[in-house]
Amino acid sequence: MAQMEEFDEELADFVRRVAELKTARSVSTAELPAVLDAALFELDHVAGKLWPHPQQGGATGPGTSRNAAAERHEQQLLRAVFQRLPLPVALVDREAVVRRLNFAATTFTGVRAGYATGRPMTGFLAHADRAAFRSQVAAVARGEGDRGLTVHLQQNPQAPVRTILTGLRPGNERRTTVLALLQPADPAGLGPTSARPAAPVPDLAETTRHAALTDLLDAMARELLGGPLGDPAELLRRAAHVLHGRFADWVVADKGAARLERIEVLGPDDEAVRDIAAQDPAAAPLVVEAARGGAPTLLVRPEDLRALGDDASGAPVLVRADVTSLLCVPLIPAPGEPVQGVLTLFRSAGRLAFSMAEAKTLDMMARHIALAMRK
Image (cartoon, rainbow, N blue to C red; front, side, top):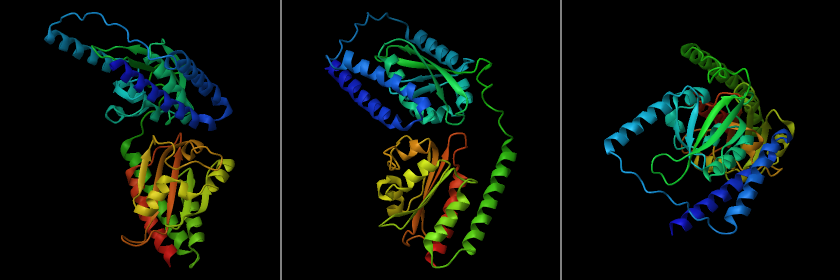
């Protein structure tokens, strides 16, 4: 029974990885070899192991009796060694979900250990690397040997990161855990801190961000006050142009609520802009939810790649736009009044994610835009 349950879990995990590989079809040609390599690994796995029958579980040797206090002391020592390792390492399960992240890894990735634990490590990587990383982790967890691959972190996609994966069996656990070692791929990298710029002075950065938001509010107010009355679509287009570039890499503006109409799409890639503009807004779940429920959404490193549906080319919008964070805000003049439209903003790799303060500022501007559209 235990063997069949393990086989069912392995099969379900294989299906999820194949679905993730399908979403990687829209990556650039230069990044396709890593995805193809991962697909070949999956084919080999299903042909050699899943198709014939569930593999017989390896026999485990008789456990040695140990003093409970001594075992606890040893575990505490191992945890301390893991946390103090000078190299960034992470423990993940076979689905690439983070179990532990040491201090060096939190500094290297810029992700707090408390936030990372329980979340897929693929969420911290560039979209093009996620499927390959998941497949390699699953292969190591199946006992197919150590693996290595080069990935890119979302916050710094220009710097390649060499990742070494090796299998571990901590304590008396039944399943193999994967240890991931992260290092800068450039030979001149001297350590985990060499690939990251020095942190800015907190108070100076906060002051700068506050000044930028104040300037944005002023620009939006001037645009709305000078806009044409009685033309909601034109007002929405003008508001989108104010937000594009200085606040977001992509701006998608949809008018209406019960029947959504895509008014404007602004972004750095003209071909992707045309495909996203041709998408029916009703096929974007987050946009429909905002139009119906009137609830704003802030997502950082979104895990559901189809949260905004597929564009006209069939690729997930979040993958096509290389989205690392997004804001989806309904345009409501006042609580209880009908929704006038929905604004969806993306930030791509290499730019800081939207903050709560920025989300609050956009929510304020959304009310002002809705008031101007209603007049």
